[in-house]
Length: 329
Image 1 (cartoon, rainbow, N blue to C red):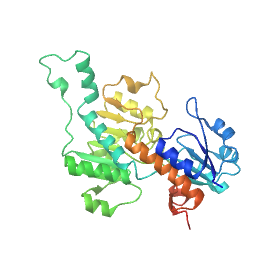
Image 2 (cartoon, one colour):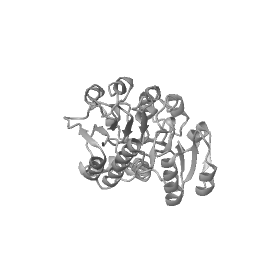
Image 3 (tube, one colour):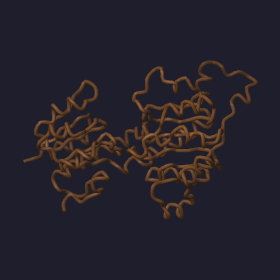
Image 4 (cartoon, rainbow, N blue to C red):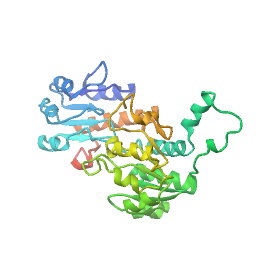
């Protein structure tokens, strides 16, 4: 008999059709996104669960006595309580690889739009405030041949480094938990301590996953290390940055600007200080948000779910629970 699964989000038609061929499916139909309490009520005897962002802790897992695998439709998985997964012997998968280039594109877009004040000057033109004689008021910052510091040299970091080195001839340095000699040799990037990276970089891109160790990695002390002419970009997770410290750094002009796709609280509140700052570009967490990439992510998530339940081929288990596994072994 086909395994029973609960799908806690909408899926594009090809991904849904794939699941229907291999599983007995029940769906969350809204309204809105499902919360953890409602999910616990709906799991029932499902053996598999597909989610995006909904917190999955011990109480949710306990509500599904037949549960064997949770497929997270995201490269990140900070919404999953991995200790609870280990305790109950439940598998957790995610969707790495497929979004790397799309997120790297967005990181470069935030660098460029922050440096050249694209959003700010777009508003100026549309509001009719562009007048003859404006010159220095419209100046931005060069990106080419400047130093880019990447914090977190995973696959997305490598994709950003490749764009920066080969496309903009930037001097790229990185800080990561583990050094990547092959990346250094291939792309001509340098390894740096975090402190030195912050002191010397013209642009700093944060790409670390959210873990207890990286929560508030960027704090007041570290923003004070940065150049006054530097731009900070965050496309990782909002909680990797201490937002009050970033607000003070921007208001005090300790750094020149910021490009942000993620925030400590999402959606960001209407009265948030970032929204009134001309030197901050704010995006609504769209790192992987293209139709092509989201469709590939959905197919990856449903394939992980089916493979884990039926023992077919490799499954992208989150690294802390074993990494990429062959579900057939």
